[in-house]
Image (cartoon, rainbow, N blue to C red; front, side):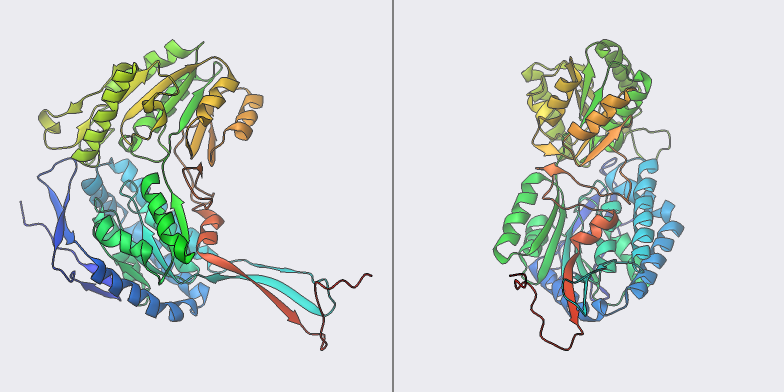
Length: 498
């Protein structure tokens, strides 16, 4: 095979090598012999340069009229459209999910770019009345400054777009650290924004480990906000790092999402949803349907169909258009998945299919794992409570709607939930009672759209949301403005009624 390509960081409008000269390999999880590229193993010195560049560029960018900022975002979205297939193939090669999914990943970035470009002529505040005569009151948005973006590997272009596009349209500058498993998609995204016309220093890309780059980024005093998507454990570290200086942080973390299948559900539709929700992206989504609660009246019928469909899934290299599920992101993650399978077996869950790494034939060079279903799970088992982040689904029987909702809510996470039912009253009760940031009716727990808020409650998030107008709220602050044109001193908040 040809020597792998050597990539660089992007700092202050230039592609530069890391100060320490070190690199790391980006390996195809479907074929460990395929080295996608060599990327900078950056350190704190590289990060300091990137933050300094973003800080220096901030004043000019915030004073650029938002419609002019929007022109650049729109051009970037157009370039994403033109290069969609190439970008999707790069993404499949570096992180494994099938082409249909990586094309969707790029499409989300396109959609977000177009949406946020439209906000360049809005960025709405509002005017209001005053309690005093001859006085005008309004509020406007203002940017925060330098934004640090730490993104995961499972959606390596969509999630950066959710963060970077709204930050840029608000007038912020960005230091972007993509996941070390998917630096090529981050590189491709930064390259397109550069070609679209971003001024130097407005967007800076740094690759490297969490310890060498991510931790100093989250602690840097010149970084006004950290936007992080990843595990709850690391999210807690981000929160602690930002707290002493009262710097903002936006956290999107874990999930243990549940589909409820009622006794009146269209079973084949529910099986379709559970299959896609549980095994799409190899179960490596924060919104994955890793739990399925099934009413006892239809439990056996559902389970038989679900297991048969899971056994029939074709697992392999995502570049093969006939493949339905790709590999785990790396061998370490596959080991973690298998450890949870052993935990489930020891807890007494009934292994119905899968439960093994796939290591023969076409699977020999990749981090493949068989689609796995546990039946007869107790809601308190670890496989029913903890995020596995792999192709493992725990099926839990229940008796009543109320019991199903109680089980769904009985985890520390609160990202996404779903119910399959033909009863409109139950559907509305579920919308009210399922305590998650996202609720689906007759659809799986995955499939969020970019114009609605995305995020969760409890240990899934810290109260912020991504996407839609909510994404702008993360990267801007409100400023209230009063204009007194009375020509006299008027004292608000003074009691004039006595």
